[in-house]
Image 1 (tube, rainbow, N blue to C red):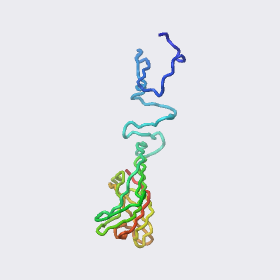
Image 2: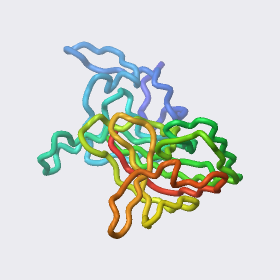
Image 3: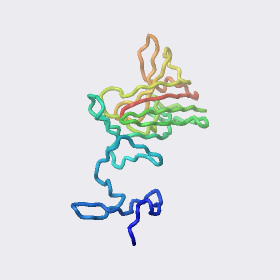
Image 4: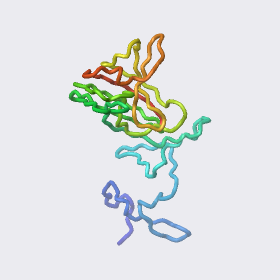
Length: 219
């Protein structure tokens, strides 16, 4: 077949499959290479890259976006994780005993977002009934999607709106995740009082409990 100018060739079907073959000169010899192998194993450098369709995909766990070219003195400048999802918060006590919980419709929900090694969780629970006689210990939420990192101290910041808790003299309740755990307990505080855990003695039998909040902790 006679040689044709590129402009005279029939247009290819896109997107390319990657199996198409192109001629290249390698070690002074003309050889063939597939489209998929043009950059295999090689770093690609560009002034900017725009994805008009599809996504930029991280193909290997632990890899990500490297910001080491920006000024900084941290131990890592690699953004290697991002994730969004949902989880189901479950109210309980450290010793659940005969605790029976019935949730209001659409009032047992949770979401989470992971950015690097930080996770932001939200929760909303509202109970139609919360009854017990033998349950005891700290009030807790279970069902968290990930375990907190094992480091010294309390690894979280958070806030919550609460109801049905009657700890005398306390006006604020905040959620907490301790190191190496995947459950939330609640710390009560107020003016002129020592902060302490919300326990079964602070939640009246047959009460309705409302807890809504946001919590950030380290993975």
